[in-house]
Image (cartoon, rainbow, N blue to C red; front, side, top):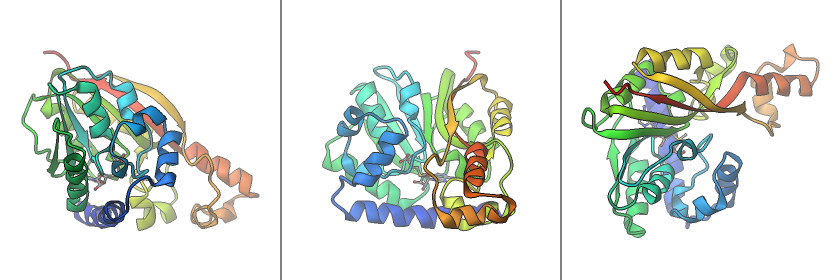
Amino acid sequence: MEAKEVKKIVRKSYAKVARKGSSCCGGDAKAENISKAIGYTKLELDSIPEEAILGLGCGNPTAIASLQEGEIVVDLGSGGGLDVFLAATKIGPTGKAIGIDMTPDMIDLARDNAKKNNITNVEFRLGEIENLPVADNSADIIISNCVINLSPEKLKVFQESFRVLKPGGRLAISDLVLLRPLPESVRKNEKYLAGCIAGAELKNKYVDFIEEAGFQDVQIATEEGYLEDFDDEEILEDFGAEEFDNLEEEKEYIRKSIQSITITAYKPKK
Ligand SMILES: C[S@@+](CC[C@H](N)C(=O)[O-])C[C@H]1O[C@@H](n2cnc3c(N)ncnc32)[C@H](O)[C@@H]1O
């Protein structure tokens, strides 16, 4: 699938999520439970606008970000603003958290969340993470949660991240990666593309992209099997049920194929 086509599918899918999110009154219990399961504490979730919690992430990048007062943070694929708002509480009024998203409805939702809650040290910019609307050498840290897997040009995303970071700046991201290639029935299925699986890259290749972009000291901070409570018959079928003797065997295979990782890396000081 061409990059343009991939983005069109992804944008359409997340526009729908944003419109649903913005039309409801927040406090979506399912989204909150997903967020807790992937590493956010209740205290963190209570500290940000509830309409920003859409249950779309696969980790908590702010937990490995070591954010400091006054820092400039850029969030790639900011959605409703969850990690931007969390970062904003940590960097305080002298810092700034900037969310980038290519889906206009998501940007509207995030801006609305900021306005309604009077949060002023944040900004949301419409744009693609492969062409960041951010100046060279201007950010202390780049965070991202379950977005880079959606990009058909992952190397470009890391090159852009490198460009906008100040020397010595850092990357702290959560994402899904693969331990073995997915069957074609999953890779070519639109449902799994927007669902953050079909576009995922092999873990080693993902790390190679980060290094190729110029980053050093690439460390995987956490790593665990994704889809722990996997029980969706339809998905199991798409993974090729006939190849397995029983459901448990298949679940185990899938669990071992897709990993949720958090990863840090640094732009050299010179
Ligand atoms: C899985 S959601 C994650 C949202 C948010 N990070 C969170 O954890 O709630 C992916 C988001 O990334 C955005 N996105 C996907 N591909 C993008 C790209 N190439 N450039 C900019 N934004 C992108 C989508 O519009 C969507 O809002």
